[in-house]
Image 1 (spheres, rainbow, N blue to C red):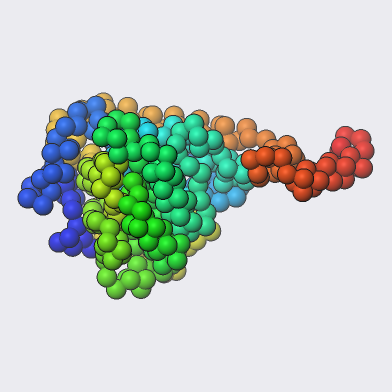
Image 2 (spheres, rainbow, N blue to C red):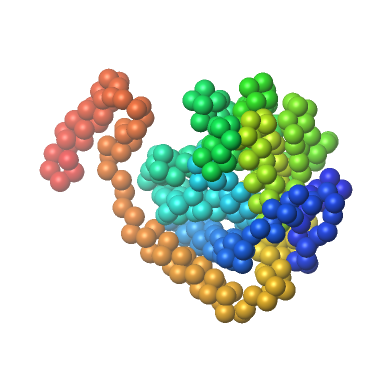
Length: 371
């Protein structure tokens, strides 16, 4: 789906800034960014893509059970992640690798999850980045419940954006067809929760194009529930950052939830078990490659005088990350048998304990080294 007049954009596909009265408030947010901020945006997008490619290669070589690529969606993720504040809680779907890294998650934990050697991957209390959710749209309910809890705890709308908490939840266009999201929107609007719904519209729910899922732009879904909503160019890291920062701060100030639809594109497969050549044309992919978020931002930085040495440094950082992930993936050992019983419940549970003991006794019955 091409961008429309409703689509907010700060950075055109040729890397030049867009001047518009509609985006003046967003431009003001971006104008406060330093060169260090802009370099960090590029570094996170570029190195995450290199990690993403390496993880896909590892899956093809039999090292992972599955891989979920985020290729092409880096700007939507990096911009929105930096648009949050440290005290904010983030609920991801299962493709937010850049967001995870920005929140301090070691990417090897994502690999472990998709290799099948961990049930969760990381402790969400340490990063305020919740666990990946593989069941579509369920995380939107989790996020709304959490945001309601923020209200009940009184930890927001105290007038201090440096401490007030808000909640950001990611989901895809396929999730908009799920009942869970619509229920979450009902409760979010009813309780005026301090949260932002961030839709990464990558144009396909596996093989189903978005134009078949909805005959109207998806950001209008939020407006249908009375939630202030916007559509942005999701391949523009600057508008992704500015729109998220303003929406999150409005939500944390007690102005109610916000809904952002980021128009982006999944350049790769849905997962490594998918073959996108079965349902989309190469001409469509080529058209979206011209809107590539990383090359677009590189043009912008070069026009500002960024040197070749910076881009070479970032490229090498990506290669180093890929090599490190490959080495540590190959070193991963099967988890202890008991891990499958850990953290199923927060407290000890008699049924889980009985199952664990049964399996231990069964294994021990073989005797010798096997036990």
